[in-house]
Length: 506
Ligand code: ADP
Image (cartoon, rainbow, N blue to C red; front, side, top):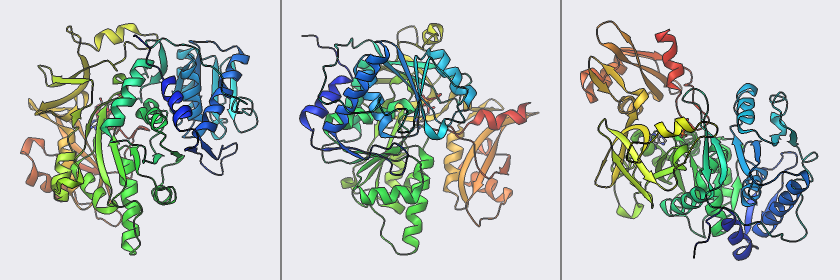
């Protein structure tokens, strides 16, 4: 029996199996926030939104764009638009007006939803209909239905979302993810991260980022309460972990660093760190060096899980979990966890001749919106998806060595910027580090380190280079180091190395 796999399956399970369980907790104090809703109430809001979209004449296949930090309304929009055959276009809320307008236009959105705080900045971003999420103008859209309504039958191969890539590369591409892709990803991620009914999830990862990696769907299926975290601030995250008895959260390495600092501050004054021995944090979307993992686990007493993937692959390809019951030392755990890990169910991996990581999974996009040519280039002749990342896949474990674009070629030798960064992260004075290739007369290019120092640390260029020499081959070591106050990162935590490189190559 061929029954289509759609996002509506997750909503069906939430409303049928767990209607009385806590479904979502909104950020308090935000105008129009929806408070605490059971899954039954959450799904009636989805019914209400579906009916409102019907009344507006927004039909199946039409695009609904939304620019919002994490909010219950963003969850409702994800469930209600995709579950009824519309296509959701979640947009990075940190983009400029110009960038957001490009996406809204490229997607051809019929409806644009804008968070009230972003309204002014995005005033020039328009669509045939534009609604501000302020609790007044959107009141009809998010009003609950009186009773559940029937959602239409859907095609599993129809697009559910278009996710525009985060912009470490030039123009954003609209990655089309189908219902089938969402379904398989949510199920595989649920297993990979060990999600279970007793979990309580905190949305620290921006939901716009590849649909929160599938957690909104997986949590709905299992009746896992979803607590909204609108802004990433370490002390506030720890407060939520405590108050809402959180057991799982996700984010990129810088989010982990923020939490680690807040946890360390608690330790310094002898206060308990909430969630110890109970909470898991999945770090992914950008490299997470072993030193960061070790410091994080020591400071928080939480378990770190490492994940790797791309928007195009739906997104998560691998997860690395080392059960605390294995009893490894913190340093050994961190060394193991620094690898991207094991392929999720339904993912096959291998490396191509140039060391590029190739993936084959039914979750992978069939194409970019408005750009079918780009899609063809993304596959090898025998149908493997080219990730653009260098790596190794041995004994079932994937290790990412570098983005192909970020590898530094110096005097014919390849230097993995990630490997050098991992060493600098071990240095007691270094808070953050980026290695880029800069021009060199003799070697073509040479590694340069840009470092952010910890509070109170003194900058000592020769000492940092000497430290690298202790741990790396000569050609891998930076030949110069500069101090920076911050490193530019995308909303998903990736260092924007092209921005850092540019002034040196101009
Ligand atoms: P974009 O390619 O536009 O930055 P994505 O969010 O799809 O948007 O980024 C995917 C890339 O992020 C991967 O190709 C890889 O380079 C990087 N990445 C994601 N997770 C990890 C990880 N755990 N370790 C190393 N790199 C990662």
